[in-house]
Structures are given as C-alpha cells and as structure tokens.
Amino acid sequence: MMTNNQKLINWVNEWAQLCQPDKIHWCDGSEAEYKSLLDGMVAKGAAVKLNDSKRPNSYYFQSDPSDVARVENRTFICTTNKDDAGPNYNWIAPDEMKNTLRKLYNGCMKGRTLYVIPFSMGPLGSKISKIGVQITDSPYVVANMKIMTRMGKAVLDTLGNGDFIPCVHSVGFPLQPGQKDPSWPCAPIEQKYISHFPETREIWSYGSGYGGNALLGKKCLALRIASYMAKTEGWLAEHMLILGITNPKGVKKYFAAAFPSACGKTNLAMLIPTIPGWKVETVGDDIAWMKFGEDGRLYAINPESGFFGVAPYTSMQTNPNAMLSLKGNSIFTNTALTPDGDIWWEGIGYDAPEGTITWTNEKFDPASGKPAAHPNARFTTPASQCPVIDSAWEDPRGVPISAFLFGGRRPTTIPLVYEAFDWNHGTFIGSVIGSEVTAAAIGLKAGVRRDPFAMLPFTGYNMADYFRHWINIGKNAPDKSALPRIYCVNWFRKDENGKWLWPGYGDNIRVLKWIFERCEGTGKAVKTEIGYLPSTDSIDISGLEDKNINLSLLLSVNKEEWKQEIDLIREHYAQFGNRLPDELADQLNELGKRLY
Ligand code: O2Y
Ligand code: MN
Image (tube, rainbow, N blue to C red; front, top):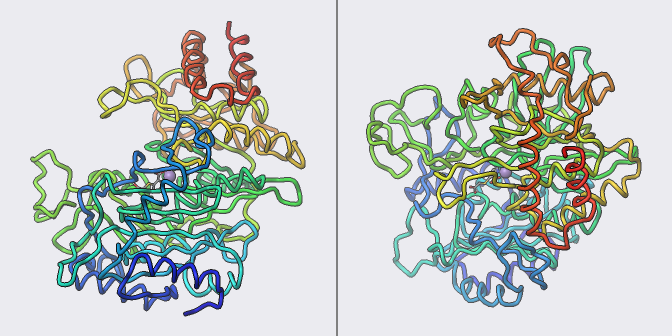
C-alpha cells in the first residue's frame, strides 16, 4: 500500500469486500506499470500493439459493439429532491440508486483485479485542482487514466490524509472459474448505470468500459460533480476549450470557448492561423475550471493531461496539430487497423490500404458502405505531445481569461460573430446556444437542438440553477471590469443556396483577431438589436483564398429570423418554469423590444 490515509484504505477495503476481486493493485503511475498492463492486454488478445516503427508505444482496441459512446439515457443525477436534478436529467433518489447498484456490485469483480487509481484533475498542488480516487476492474481504464490525468504515487503523496472524491467503476462482467474473458467485457445496456451523487460528491459507474462512462475523471468528476461543487463554492467548471492567442506584437490573451458536439472544438483549440504573425496555442480542448485570482480576473486550468478526441475526419488538412500529437504513446479505440500495424479512419486524408480491418474486426470493404472506423472512434494522447501546447498549460495558477466564446452550428440567423452587451446578456447567449439538426438524425426532431453552454449532458444539477450561478458569478465578481467579455460565434452560416459562407478552420483566426482587438479596446463594432457586431471593414480578410466572402451577409441581422428565434427561445425557456432566473426572462423581453 502506498498511503497511510486511513479513510482511503477503509474505503478501498469496503469496496473490495463487496466486489470480491481476486487481487488489489494500487497504481503507482509508472511507465513500467503502464507497459505491463498493456502488454498483459495484448497477451490476452484484448489489444494490439501498433507497429513501433510507425507509431511507437501505441495500442489499438476494439470495444464491444454495444459499448461505443457515453450513454446519456443511462446517466443519472441522484439528488435528494428530483427538482434539484431538473428537467434535463434522469433522476433516481440516492438511496434507491445505491440499493440497486450494491446488488450489481456484489461479486462483480470476481476473477479480476481491483485497481486503485489515485488521480489529480489539474496540476498537482494547484489550488484549483481536485484529487479523486477511482477503483476499477478495467486495465484499459487504468491505461487511459494514466494519459488523461496525473495519476499514481505522487498523487497519494500530495493527498496525505486529505479528502478525495471517491469514484467507483466496474465493467460489470464477473468471471466464473475457467470462464473465458471477452476482449471487451461490459454489461448489457439496461444494467449500465453512470450515477452521480453530487450532494455527497460520489460517482458510481457500472457496466460500461467506454470513454466518458468509465474514465471517471473526465465528464463525471470534472464536469458533473465539479459543476455542483463550483456552484456551492463560487467558481466555474465548464465544458470549454482554452486557447492562448498572440498578436504580431507579442501580446498574448487567453480565450475559453464552449460549443456543442460536432462544431470543431478540438480543431479550434489547435488552430493554425492563416494571418501571418498571429499564433494560437492550446491549454485544453474540452474542460476549463476557473476561479477568481487576487487581481480580480478569472484564471483557468485544464484539469486534464490528455486529449480523448474523435478520430474520424481528423487529418493533416483539418487538424495537423492533433495528427502530430498522435505520433506515439497513444491509445486508439474503434478506429480501423491497417495490415502494417497502424491505424486508419474515414477522413484521415488517404485511402485505406488493402487488408485494413474494421472496428468490428472484419476485412474492410470500401464498397460496402459500412465505415471502417466507428464514428465515435477515439484517440487518447498526452497533451504534452501537442506541437502547439501552451507554455503555461500546467501553470498551477491557471491562465487569465479575456473572453468567453459560445457557438453552435446555425445555417441561418446567427451572424459570424457578435459581442454581448454585458455579463447578463452573455449569460443569456450561453443559455440558448445550440445546433440545427435535420430530421434524419435518428430520434431527433428537426430544428435547433439547444445545448446551453454546451453543458446539457454535464451539469450535476438543475440547469436553471446553473444559469442562476452564471448570473451570480457576474454579480459577485470582485472586479466587474475584469470579467471576460462574452461573444457568440457561428462558423456555419449558409447562403440561400445552402453554400457555407465562411471558410472556417485556420481562417477562424480572423474572428479571433477581432475579438482580441475588442478586448484591447481597438476593434470597431456597431451596436445592433442583438449585440455589438463587427463593422464589415473590421474583420481582416486579407490574403483569403476565396475573394468572394460575403461579409455583409455573414454579419447581417435578419429581423424576421430573429423574431422566430425569440419564439424558439421562449419554448426552450418554458421547460425551466419559475426556476428560470428573472434576469434571463428580462434579457429575452429586452431582445424582443429591440426587434419589434
Ligand atoms: O463517447 C465518449 O465517451 C466520449 S465523450 C467526449 C470525449 C471527449 C471530449 N468530449 C466528449 C463529449 O461528449 O463532450
Ligand atoms: Mn466534450
């Protein structure tokens, strides 16, 4: 045992008694431990070691076809009162959930090893960081946690006799004596439970070995439990990337940005500017924890130490920095495997070599119409390998945030960029972001799918109370003039023929540049009904390949579309009843008055 923390030792022993593993292993976080776990999985046929001359120290996994993504319908917020979970979450009372799960956990680790993973979300020793301890019976989870968090003995040393956030995980597949272990053990969907107890700061996850269901530091701790703690303690735990942007004079600022899925969040975090002299560097690609510093500014850390990114359509064209981060020391899950021992996926930028194996372990037939990689195939890779990782990415004090960006995929209505009038208006903008979906997306109604602050699956409490928390952060800020400015961005506006109006990718620097200049006090803007918009001459389009950029359309406010938007926002707000903060209802009314 590597600790004298009696509370931790007792907790591990209690769970071991219930789960009945064959062995207990306290993870020290060493390279030797990592290698031995992965080599063990290779020996069992659960993993493939990739060709060292192509991708050194990297491994390939195929999950069970029933266990390929976060399972929102099996994710629960277990607060004492149902209303505290609110209208957007599955709720079961804590005692009832614990009774159900104790029965499932009983003997669930038979034939397996219980791994104890001490981990820190955030740099060790930072005032903003939090320590968790996850128990799991999945060596795959241990290996991924080693990349995604600071993990092992050093964490126990920092913890001493202090408090930790307890995280329980099992794949839910006990082994009878002599029973063969499948390469990806997991439980059937109706036995999967990703359960959060925000009031007691506990996570109990059962039945899935995949991503956000199983790497409990990420969505479960760093967003659902942390957002509840942040509300109670007066800070922010957000589903935001963090980037540093430097102008040609060497002045640097940091922005944090929230987007619903499929908006290119990782691409923006690692953007390569198309305007000479500008530089973008990455602090984080998914989560930001922020607290006020002594100077009254909000300081952000990335609580993670790796990227768990979507592989398909990541390429040297769309995101060279992500591709270069994957040069080695990485884990690939549900991509395709090439005959020469490397990985492949749709949109990687070249054809699959003959003999490529799909994520379902079949020979890939491009004519079959079935993809070789699962659309949610993932890479797990150390953030330190990103060629543009920011020099301050592990600064325990965090980085000072100058601007928040909120976005979504909106073919109509929303201009390329606009600035909020003030904090409450910015909170209003965050509370209504979303992406337009077509009816073809299975199980969804066509229209705008709202994903407030991109936190819909991730607040550990009632979304209306989360809005109230954002209003309160502005109200109680030590220096209101030091609060980040708030922007709405939309790279996805189309013309009447359905053609994208904006090139996106590296050209998004042109929008970031305007935001940078606004924060400096130099960027020009016009006041409109919806916020401050750039004057058309203040977006730098010099050197753009496409000379026909229609900036007037990109920056136009179509009043008829906005009147419809108001009706849609009213419907969205209705679900929160009288828990919706008055300040947001007022924002909507004021917008209406400005437009009618
Ligand atoms: O499918 C999963 O389990 C991964 S979910 C995920 C992973 C990395 C970053 N963001 C997300 C997300 O769902 O927002
Ligand atoms: Mn995410």
